[in-house]
Image 1 (cartoon, rainbow, N blue to C red):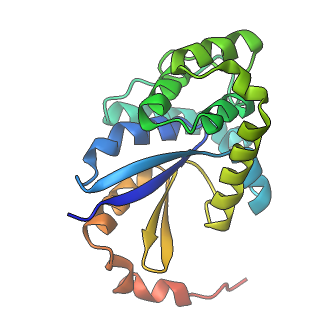
Image 2 (image 1 turned 90 degrees about the vertical axis):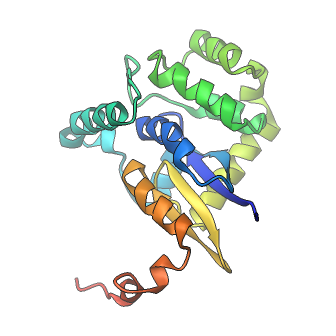
Image 3 (image 1 turned 60 degrees about the horizontal axis):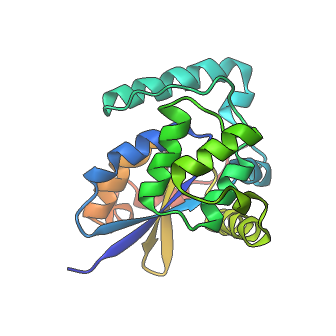
Length: 210
């Protein structure tokens, strides 16, 4: 059986990424997940977007939806006392250590199961201890460069939000964004020609009207 590797682009401020982690067991047995930490703020800035928590009318709805979706998949979400928080230093830890999936799960448990924001010196130290990564990596130049490179590569590959799962597809790739795209991801992994047929094939030809 040929193994397939897919990339999970995540930012620790995303409750939806926490839910997606709980669904990874639904993936086919030949699929391996490579987690990739990225900085959502830089991605949003590149595409000229605002995060859902930055839109006052959308903020509470987003929190409710993530908790609801979590419950549907056996995940009890507990938000940190402030959100969004600044995830930069925590993400540098993850990027600098090239954190594996087990470490990423511990990281999200810290944020959305324990409800803690690793955005102060004290909480960042506790976060580092929890995930098993030296806290000094938060200021390491190589860690900073790794996170920057991950984010730039994600943008180049068309990632516009998190969580986004990027799958190689022939000479290109496909991007599946969010919890609500996970079922579509499963369908595509079952048949990678899915989007080459109707009713999907003509969608690339739809033009912008206004």
